[in-house]
Length: 109
Image: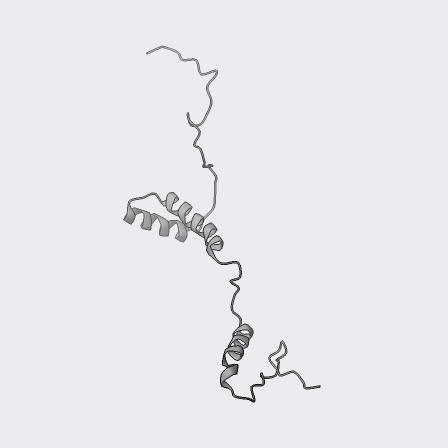
């Protein structure tokens, strides 16, 4: 071993840069970290890897939904039921009057 080493051209940090990952500092709630640590210990993996997988799943979820999938509202459900049940109402199949935003029936004026 030498008495002295020359570190004048040395760089701080890891010898090899990790590709595809970036080191960040993030603040998470204690209960979230404990959940992932317990789950990771049970499965024998790292908790940071599990958090990364959960975040990746959250990113992929909207990509898997069809573009025309919208939240179903009460008004939309009523419209669909009226359309589907119309053939079974007989000849007097008039749709019920439209309702205003407050839920009251619109006047027949």
